[in-house]
Every structure is written in C-alpha cells, then in structure tokens.
Image 1: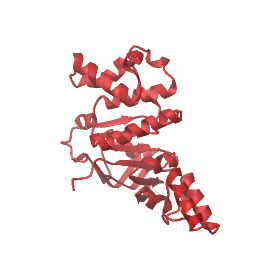
Image 2 (image 1 turned 45 degrees about the vertical axis):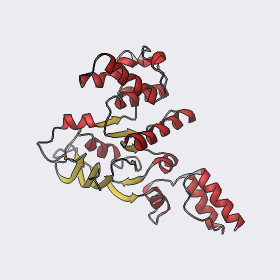
Image 3 (image 1 turned 60 degrees about the vertical axis):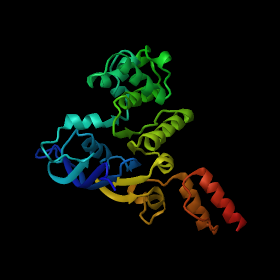
Length: 287
C-alpha cells in the first residue's frame, strides 16, 4: 500500500507562543488520510479544526511537538518548499468571498493556472473544465462580475478556482454551506467523481453529520485540540465513544435507529443513509 496522503501524529501547537496571550490550540492531534479517499474532520467550535487544516496546506510548520507529512513531504524538514506543496494542496475556505478577488468570474478562476504558466486555449480549457465541474456554465458566468454572484454561486466559483489548479489533495471547509439541495447534491457528486475517476484525495471539514455519513470513507473527531475518535463512519457514529460528550450530535438517521433499538425494535446493521435505514427497518418489522 502506498504512503497515506496525510499523516498527522501527536501534533501540538500554541497560538502566540511565548507571549502573555499564548493559547493552546492543538495538543495530541492525529489524522490519517489515505490517497484516493474522502476524509471528514469534525468537532465542536474551538476544537482546533482550522488550526489543523492550516498545517495541511503548508501555512504553518510544526515547531514544538508532533509530525505532519503531506503528500510524502515532512513539514518539519526545512528543505521542503511550502510554496510547491501549496500547488498540490487546494484549500476552499468556509467563506468564499474571502477567496474571490478578481473582477470577473473567469479571471478569478484563471488566476491560479496563470501562475503555473498556462495561457491561451490551454488556459481557457482548464477554466471551462473547472467551471462546468461545479455547475457554472462557462459562457454564462465567465464575464459575470464576481461580487454579483449569489452566495451559492460564490461557493461554487471558489471551488472551481481551486480545481483549476488540479490539486492532488483538496480540502473544503464547510463546502456546502449556503447551497440549496440541488447545489449540495451537485457538490457531493463532484467530490465522489474526483475520488472515483481521478483518484483525488479529499478532506471535508463539516458540522453536517448527515453529509459526513453520506460522503466520508474515514472520519476524524477533534475535541479540545485532541483526536478523540478516528475510523470509518459506521465505526465512529455507532461506536462506544459518546460524541455527545464532546458537543457533537450523531447523524439523524443514526439517532433514529438507536431510539428504535432502545424501544425494542431489533434493527439490523448500521444504517447511515435514509435508504439504508428504510431497508433495515422493514427487515426488522418483517423479521
């Protein structure tokens, strides 16, 4: 098996270290993400998720204690050039308007590939491909003013701008916030295609447990700067570790199944989606 795309071990970080305002952010964070899988990072507010992600994009190096290896690059090695790593790691921020800055949508999405030296028809094709992947028609949106877009359109444009760089690792912070059901389904389908057809590694940071249950191959739970659970979604959401004690709710489907079992209905398996739950409940009722 090839080396994982991301390895984080016992990572510790203190904001404003050695100052009167020093604040512990991470102390013992672990995360593993295999190449070609969709991982999810979940946790309550203040758990350290944003800090952890900042290491994966090379925005910070580990300075105190812990190990971070991204796409085979050990960030503690001063010989690792972080600007080169960032070309392989795409980060979509939670607030897309922080990521958009060009006047026109097409120019904004073209900015990254231009920095890689792409010009002319090659550049145009790259922008078209990225826009259409997220459901933005190239001809209709390329000359639209960026800040005339709706919130959902801004989010899709931000994702397109990152996809145009063709990263090996794609990180999305609350990728579907502000999208209607159709837009959410489109982004979910896109992430699956990136994994299944291109072998891209994806990490989503999400507070939507239903989204995590539906999409993720692996889930990492962060609380108070420490990893408290890690594994497949069924293992994490049905496991013995109480997510509630860390300020998290299980997916509604899981809660429903657990309540039915507590009420005496022997529902089989570990359903995570509505369709799985419906099938399992019918089996229980017939059995």
